[in-house]
Structure formats: C-alpha cells, structure tokens
Image 1 (spheres, rainbow, N blue to C red):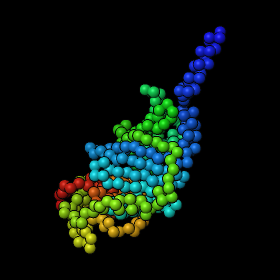
Image 2 (cartoon, helix red, strand yellow):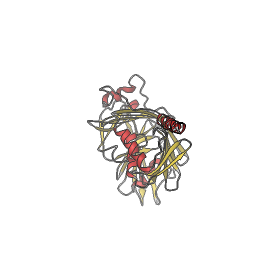
Image 3 (cartoon, helix red, strand yellow):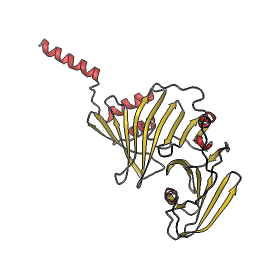
Image 4 (tube, rainbow, N blue to C red):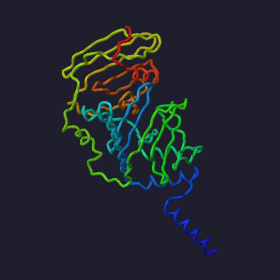
Amino acid sequence: MKKIFLMLFLFIFVCTLTGCKKYNENTIKRDLEKDISSIKGYHVIGDLQIYNGDNTYRYKVETSNYKDNYRVSLINKNNNYEQIILKNDDGVYVLTPRLNKSFKFQSNWPENSSQVYLLESLVNDIKNDTNLKLVEKNNEYIIECKLAYSNNKNLVKEKIYLDKNLNIKKVEVFDDDNKMQMRMVFNEIDKKAAFNDKYFDLKENLKKDNTETKETISEIEDTIYPMYLPSGTYLSKEEKISKKDGDRVILTFSGETPFMLVQETVSKDDTEDIPVMGRMEFILDSVGAVSDNSINFISNGIEYYISSDNMTEEEMMQVAESISPVAVMK
C-alpha cells in the first residue's frame, strides 16, 4: 500500500513540474486571459506571411506593447522597407521612416479588429468565440476560432498553436474556402519587456533611419497601370506633372465606374503628419489607408491614391492589388 501511495505522490509531483494539466475550451480561455492580462509590457519577434493570389508578401515583425502604447515594426523581406504602426497618447500612426513619411489615423486601433501579431488581440478572439474548437496534437494545443476582421469579411477563422505552457507559437488565418491567407510565426516572446521614455515617440521613430541614406525615387520613368478594371471602365486620360521634388502621374478612368489613380514620388523632406480618415489595411507590400471612397498607400517609393464616388470598396481594393508595370489597353 505504501508503494502505491508513493507512486501516486511521485506521479502528481512530476505532473506538477512538467505541466501535465489538461485543458478544455473553458479552462484554456481562462488561463490564457489570466496570463496575458497580467503582462505590463511585452516584445515579440516573428515572421509574417500574407498570401494574395499568386503573390506572397513576407515580413519580419517586431511587436512592442506597454499599457496603451504599441509599436509594430513590419520589414518587407523583399525590399527591406520598414513600416511602423505606432500608437501613443497622441494618436495612431503608420510611419515609413526611410521616406520620412507619417499618416495619422482617426482610429481606435487595435480594438476595432483582429491582429495576428498582438497577443491580447488573439486572446480576445479566443474569448469572444463561444463555439471554439480545441485539439491536442503533437504535444501542442490547436485552437480554432472565429475572427473579428471588420475590415475583411473574407477572413473568417484562425488556428492558434500553443505549446504545453500556453505560449503562442503560430497563427494561421483562413478564408471561406479554407485557404490560408496569413501565417504568423512567433520566434521570441518576452513577457517582461521594458522600454525607455522615447520608444513610442513619433519623432524618435521617424529619425530611426536618419543614420542611413533615405532612398527616394526622384522621377517616375514608367507609369504603373492597374491590371483590373471594373466592367465598362477604360483609361480616358493620362497626365504627367513635374513637381519641385519629383513627378506626379494622374490617370483618369471613365465609363460605367469612373475613378482616378494618382501616383507620385515621395519627398523625404515632407515631415508633416498627414491626417487619414479610414482604417489600416495590408495592400500589396505595404500598410495603407482605406476609406469608403479612397485608398492611399506607398509601394517601392511611390505613393498611390485611388479615389472614386462610384466604386465599391471591394472594387477599389481589386484595383489597388492589381497594380502592375504592364500597360492596360487604352
């Protein structure tokens, strides 16, 4: 009998040390929420892939959070361009340090949508789904839950992979056809991170690339045309204007769904905060601004602006995501 009690004691002791706790849908919600809510500041390093048709955009991601301050660095692995999503006491910004460019959003980000690179956002997705699925497989937990992507109704669910200590290791986002649209891999998570007073400061983050050469394009050699046009819409006018510090090209499209596409070189000396109405959205290889009748984003040193009173938001996104250096029929 003593041997039985001894073996039982050893089993309980080993389980306590190795974390043999079994989770169900409710207990994993509770413990994850408790863990994340106890964090004062965290720093995450990971890799993000976004799939758009035949194209895959790859980013190195660094996420920093302290109380209500956020800093998300997204470095495009193809061209090494960095954009920073910044939230501090003054507002929400998207910065392109190499171009000395900043957009200020009238937004309650990140509360208004799911974010695969924010720990508390993922926990909220889990907490808000009353019908989530939990699977234990290959020494890890896989949680499948619904999404709250208010800005992209096509993204409907995600799978969150956790180790036995409930550390998030990977997130996969899927559309209605069960095709993967995003994958975020968490390489490092520091849940006791501390930051200096200037870490979330706008000007300090814009100065980040000042030690390097700010690469800007001084002229537009070839006009970039969209490969997608709404039915019954055609290019009716093309105008190129020389600015003091570069070029601007204005494309006017007429027909059943008229719109305007402007592309221009970005001046690195322009340090003014540009107010933006709308929300942040991944567009091609960058983070842009989307509103009911316009889209604005920067790609490869060129700023693009699409405006229309007749197009749906979905049509504007299709135009933006089809921009290519191949001419359309005039």
